[in-house]
Structures are given as C-alpha cells and as structure tokens.
Amino acid sequence: MLKNIPKHLSPDVLWALAAMGHGDCLVVVDANYPAYSRHQRVLPIVGVPLVSIITDILKLMPVDDFLEKPVVKMVPDGDLGYGTSVHDDVEKIVNEIEQREVGFQPVERTRFYDVAAGAFAVVATTDDRPFGCFIFTKGVIRSV
Image 1: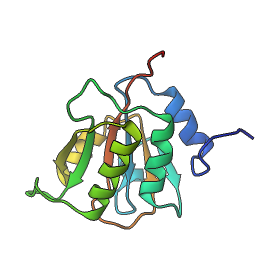
Image 2: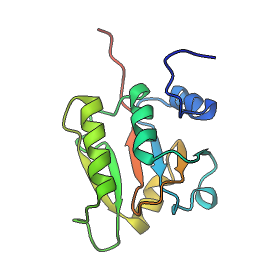
Image 3: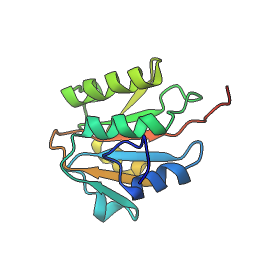
C-alpha cells in the first residue's frame, strides 16, 4: 500500500507515468475509442469518469510547458471548431492543476488515430461522452 496515490490509478498506470520521459505522450480515451485494435500498451480504468482519471493523472504528471499546445483533443472530421462539454471539463481541470493556460490542439478523429499511434500508452476509460479523447505530452519536473 502507498500513501497519497490517487485511488483511481492502477499499478500499471502508475508504472507508465513513472516510465515516461519528457516529450512522451499519454492518450486518455472514451469508451468509443478502438484502443485494443490500435495500441500495444492499453491500460483500462473501468467505471470512473474521464475527468476524474485525468485529474488523478495530472496530480502526478506535469504537462509540457515547452510546447504551445501540449494537449490534443479529438474533434469530428471536418469540424476543427467543434466543442463539447467533455472538452470544456478537461480544459478547466488541466488549467486548474497546471495553474496556467494550457494550449489544446483540435485534431480530427481520423488523424487523431495516427497521432495517438506514437503514444507511450493509452488509458482506456468507460466514459461514454463522444469525442472524450485526449493526448497529453509529458513535461519536466523542476527542482525548487
């Protein structure tokens, strides 16, 4: 048992977060995403809202601050201006945890699959809100 570890994160997710280096990407996806047919390292978390999972992940993993838009959000093909409540919820929590305005890059669904292919791991959730798929680029931890 460990103290102060967010309860929704499995040992496999904790390992992935620790093993990732600066610039590596973590994909967090909704229930509709074809994770198992597209990725080798799929880390399932069942029955927990996507925003709760992302909140727990970002308590441990810094978001890159060298990139202008270190977070990718999936949008429908042909609609880069698309927005949904899951996007709003995730943007709010990322900005709160990072204590800064974090840039989000909209990427069309079909292209998102290609971009996500190079990720270190995929956290597959059972959240059923469409287009609840995000790619986070890991940042650095600086000494104080």
